[in-house]
Length: 532
Image (cartoon, rainbow, N blue to C red; front, top):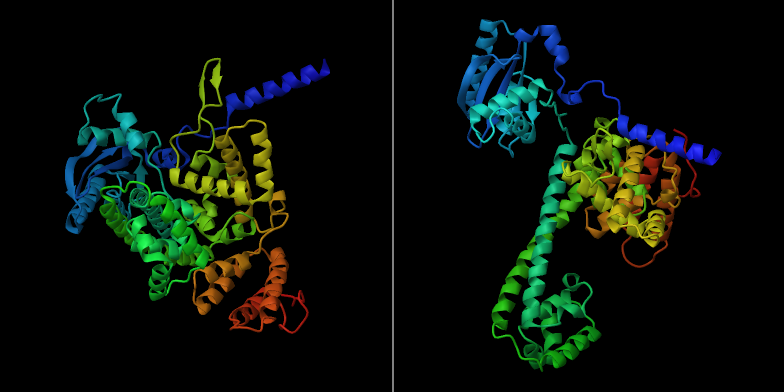
């Protein structure tokens, strides 16, 4: 009986939380509230300038808070003289009508809104952004089926009065360039992946079964060289082992004899099949696409080095301590997030990325566990979900959690969302806090500096640049993690200096990093620290 009462009270409390939700201080969007300024200036002395941008020109008007038009809708060319004229007209209207305060609202339209946003912001006006969905929703009740620029301007005005003209925080360096580089790299990766699929299709038509011989075809130089050299299995047999050996050596490509034996065994089996009539053409197309693919991959490599350079300038570099998060995924997350100070708590990250179920509630009906939200910052959500997938594969804690829920029959997508939600809390605590993470996923924490060093070693980064970035990263490390980092770096240095063959570049690099961490001279025992 007592257990039943306790269970029912828990359900009622849960239902109450669902119904009440978070407490609202205002029905307006927090970043769109203008009621305080309207109250101070007076509703008839507060004006809103609405701008509906296109590529080369915009439609704009000016009206007071009540909707009385002060400047009729007109066309504004996106040129400096025309912007200057518009600013002068606004100033004159302010004096004529005694306007004490005003805001400028611009509808977000691709990148077309940037020119008027910058022009009016430079003139000293507070410029806000209105989402096209808000404009549409406020236009449909007044002018259904009648979309014109004047109707859109009127809808923008109504949306701004309701608090949908949002102030967006300005993104400063290094986050602005980091975001651009992250998106550019992602675009190149997606294009190269699509081209790789096309190459496999053409290669299969010309040389059926060849791509299946290698786990990583595009990472195998010898396999790609043979595929470019021979258009059919018969061509491979005509060259034979000696011919292939000679051609690969002429191109200075390293290979193993067993690789050639594998290719020749495949060619003997595939030569018995009827060849495709257009095999030479498919081979030529695949070769052209392969050149394009390699060109894209060559552009991605330096981009990733730049991402590491941007990451070390932010506190997001601390995420590298979590096993399963690498430099690129951490930079991806940092670029889409922006400064951590823009988020009050971890739930703000979840809200912006839309990692919570949609809800439908009316009267006694309450479906609080709907599908995941469609309207969200999709790029931030994608960055978080990619990290969640990596954690599910490479982090011991999250891999165990995923296996447990998978054994209970949970949906694979739900597992990723659960891990993503956990990561938003961990990521916020790791970046916003100044203490090492104390969580099971970090029981065997990775070395941040060693991850960065290994990353730059794989990308053939110059030694002076590696040293500069490692020293910059040290400045963002929590003080209590420096002993751990110093211990790992000292062990790596001792291992490298014990080697007797070849140059030891890391011996020139790590002592400076150890000094930055507070470690005394290299000759002293590992772990000896100098007090700050």
